[in-house]
Amino acid sequence: MATEILMPALSPTMEEGTLAKWLVKEGDTVASGDLLAEIETDKATMEFEAVDEGVIGKIMVAEGSEGVKVNTPIAVLLEDGEDMGDVDKAPKSDPADSNVAPASASDATAPAPGHGRGATDATPAPAAPAKDGNRIFASPLARRIASQKGLDLSQINGSGPKGRIVKADVEGVDATAPAAAAQATASAPAAQAAPAPVDPSAIEAMYQGRDFETIPLNGMRKTIAARLTEAKQTIPHFYLRRDIQLDNLLAFRSQLNKQLESRGVKLSINDFIIKACALALQSVPAANAVWAGDRVLQMKASDVAVAVAIEGGLFTPVLQDADMKSLSSLSAEMKDLAGRARDRKLAPHEYQGGSFAISNLGMMGIENFDAVINPPHGAILAVGAGVKKPVVTPEGQIEVKTVMSTTLSVDHRVIDGALGAELLGHIVDNLENPMGMLA
Image (cartoon, rainbow, N blue to C red; front, side, top):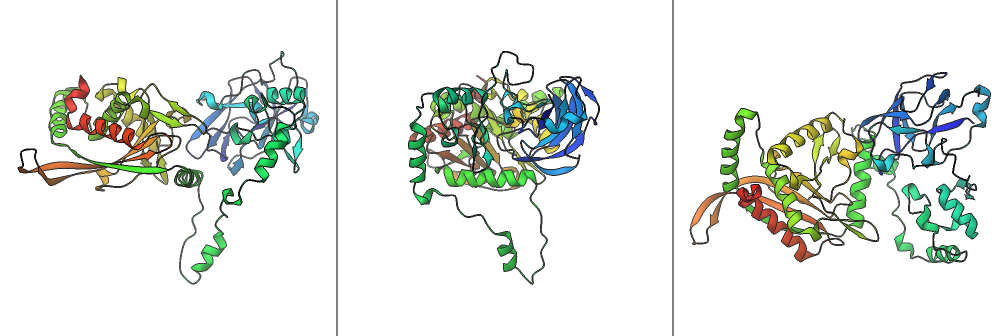
């Protein structure tokens, strides 16, 4: 039977994308793994490949189309023996059953096992009911369980991507529970309602008679706006500040770079900061955690994200297992990630995840600032410039030292004050005594 190919979601934040280029045309025969299209997301341009084999019966979205919503049908795939007359009979696909997959996407964006057309051992699930004229999306297993229990899916709030109802939402729920849940939702305080959106026309009217240029938001700018608004509205930030004396680090770095010069390696201060934070997360494992809605996930490895400025926005590529890597390895990996970030060539798994982030504006002359936490991270370290300052030594003498200001922004749901102070203390100690990081 003809099957719709849907615009896939390449990341948890993606709501729409640009279908940059079709790599196939109508009538082409494709096999699993063949590239179908190039799609620009809010972060990068990705190639997508077919999951099933068949014939491209109809292309429904022209290449170059912008603002294509996730789960919008973009093409129709025909099985062997079908013709163009079967296109109009194509079933409406479940978002989980899209027949395209990112060529280098993470497991989070891959189709669920057993949901493709090749699965022969799955019992068809009953169709999801409609609510207010809109289809309710639920996994086949969730629909099957709901059907067996006589549950009304329109009364169940989904916890999956885009509100999709999954197995956990219907397990343990009896037929009367959804009604009670709906009543509780209806009686929730009005104060919990989302704020009214900004009226662009009203804002422009304020500047009537003044010259200005209207710049439409691209996908990345929309995502940054949404994520940072979410962060400031939902994350209870608190801030811890420490000055770090860099003189020992600067001398140690100079010595190492002389020894590594023959290998073409040149370590930056940022490389040491990444290593210092990664080791500190291992020293304070309770702070190596992320917020997951109704629970906290305490991570084992130190996966550290680093903010990289690019034209029109920023990326936060993640250096996985940073505590286990040498300074030279971290330096090479960071250069590679930063370069590909600026070219928008990072795969989703390279900028998603991590429990901790670093934002360094010191190289731009900023002495101190407060960074906004990137959810679901538990904290982010804002790094300022190293500045010569008079410092009182333990012996009471005044000496000129190179001092770097840092601010740790912390999610109080994940990390309490004393725990955050302990984490920042280890970061300071690692940077002021850099030789210990090589032990």
